[in-house]
Length: 274
Figure 1 (cartoon, rainbow, N blue to C red):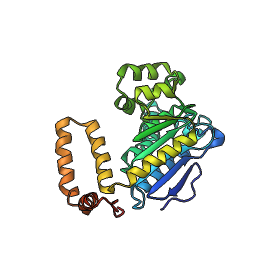
Figure 2: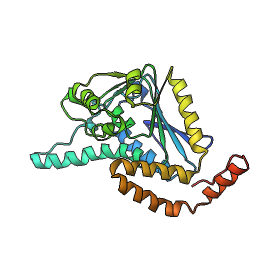
Figure 3: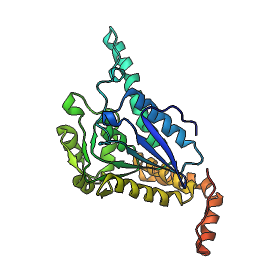
Figure 4: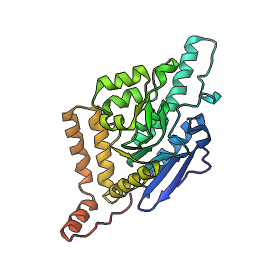
């Protein structure tokens, strides 16, 4: 895998095509620095094309998942210019780089299972809304903090969170008050699908889920994620047409016959890497 000299993220291959990605700025409570924005995109774009990778588990080291954007990193501050219009143009490029870092998680067709523990604030919420499955520990809490520091969240939360949970009222309450949401409430609202006693238990459960996903046809898995993403952003009819087009080629894969034969023989199918 072509990832070297990472300073804020750790990547560890796990057996069975699983890769464990960890935010690794424990001393800063995994505050997102400019280096982390850049490395996040690099990691997920690399894993997207890594044929050995089938599923990703994303967690964080230290006491918290993420305390949000690192306000002490001068590179995170919007660039300056003498003219207001030129300053605006510079801001667009600056903020787009941050958006692309987490969009890379969503666009990586290898499913990502996120594990949240402790604080998940601001940019941390932006990050997890780009993942596919979210688990947390009992000590986890979530906070859309941006309104409390004078801006609207602009890296993904306001675009993705309404499509993850079923309550527009709740999304607006969280986004407009900047209050904390604890694990039990996050489970009730559908932000996470499981709450585990500890971080270690949540990581173990995430690896179990990842192992099950990795046991299926990688062609079927990436096709499922791609079509779920498409359906979220399009009409039902558009999505029905899209999946037909997708499966017109995918159904010709050897994986379909392997899965059918294994089922009839009551054996576990073995699929080729992508």
